[in-house]
Image (cartoon, rainbow, N blue to C red; front, side, top):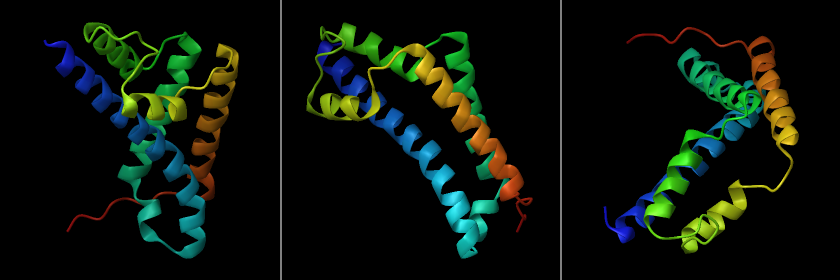
Length: 134
């Protein structure tokens, strides 16, 4: 793989990673708000299962001391591109600053666990309904 392609793929993975973060955080914010507004889509079981699964996976990885596979993949591609893992393209730099926070590992474990518990509690506060087949 050429270094240019590896760098481009690393940026694409970073964009996808930011998308995952926006999905996890966005749905967690929209479910209670949408329930108050009467939005039916916030109660869709498939969406809620995907959402709960995503945050449980994230919290479990933190408890196990593992990095996110997207982070690992992105850093491997940056090394293939000949980039230091902290020196990135324009997209990589700005999205990386948004996504990667310098904090002790225990802070991430605590934050991901608390967020997973919040998402699980949403199942009680705003229970999902079975998706209707057309």
